[in-house]
Length: 201
View (tube, one colour):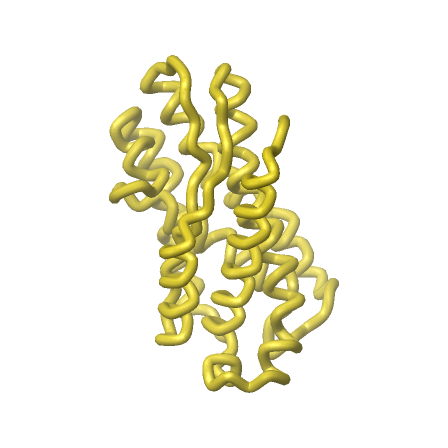
């Protein structure tokens, strides 16, 4: 796969903005603009968000290219600002941009391109879950790399499968409702369980 200079800049900008947004969301002291709280948690957030976000977008691009598309990620800087502002308010709205692709394509292929990102996040929950179970990796502000990685990937999978606007779920829903439900329902159920039934979230 090839990456233009603008695409690299957009990927890095989105990664940095999401890393900060999730830091503000997970650490109350960070929302109060406590520099120590931000600096202590930000590297862990950047690591977990970086893996979750970058592989999500690269999965979209890889599948699109496999289907003969010209594909590039473009950040939505307005939505990146909203992600940070929403995190300051105590919730998270993460729609940092999208992989734009062009070329002749079927509805099925378009659905598979959209599905690739959320499925990648679900698959990433497995190695992060193994880290959480083994206790490997540092603990910061009550979170381990493993538990944070599981939470962020689960959230991104469920959020992106919402069938609304530019989110992946809308395209998948139009293509195949059974596939949509098979991915969205367990991801959404996990996020509900995580926030309502798991200490530390």
